[in-house]
Image (cartoon, rainbow, N blue to C red; front, side):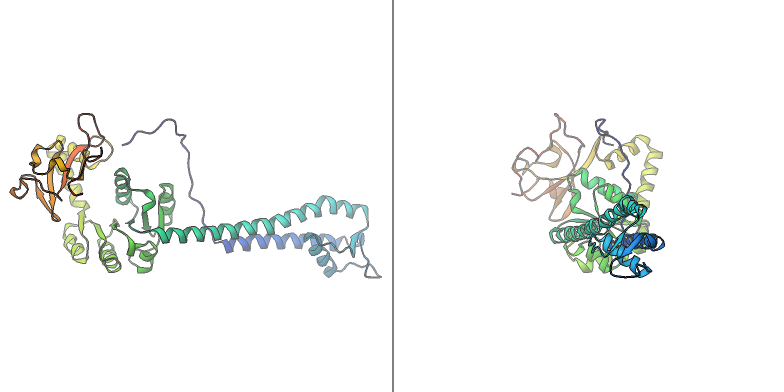
Length: 359
């Protein structure tokens, strides 16, 4: 686990409450209507303290009170109705004037804010959709999904190039706190996957807890993007072949993997510790794939600085001892075991400006 920087102040970020801008506008208009009603009744019941210059009788009706309220709150002020008693003028100065200011702030300020925020968010989403290509889609943001994202980020993947698809509202806050874009919905639906940009994605990782959901999601993803690399999780080994038939390039059986690790830890605790170390990024050892360097062409896998365990040649994986890969050739890629962090005695080949054999 990476160490926490003590200089960073710990804080709690609650997920932002997302509401429709139209609901917010309706709430503000309701509050404005309440202010108008309050002021109308205030003027009507104190009508004797007001004079209507256009009415010889001087009587203030309910309609007159409403009219006076609207022209006053809107700062129009025609002057045909005016307070004449001292207490009415005091009420205008101490009550109605603050109501007028609050009314203007409420209607103009907050309305513009809501509309501007909504428009800005729409423009932001549209820009994101236009530039979103070659990204990674994570279907399901449970324990497996979070671990997949952590591994991707630990290996240099940009968080802005990761999109989470999950139907849970609580997941949205968690993913946003992790700096990830979220599409809320059922990943078996084509429209949801379209919103996540699956047709333009490079990779799709499917990690829901139901094998039937994973199979249907894999089928839908493969229809939308025939060239995407799809990795799917299977709870049961018997469902792994079905997922591959559905279009998954790689299937990881979670229950089988956990069971093997538990068995190894029981039979050989030290071996179980090493295997857990290999699966944990950021400390100790890690399993990684890297390019072959020019000065490594023609060498045997066993003689390289890294501990080579497999060689990828022509999209096929060969064990390091396989006679086919006795001598490494251009275009090969190496599966190695190396320190999770570069050490002076174990520098990472290909990260210091060395020429790659594939170039």
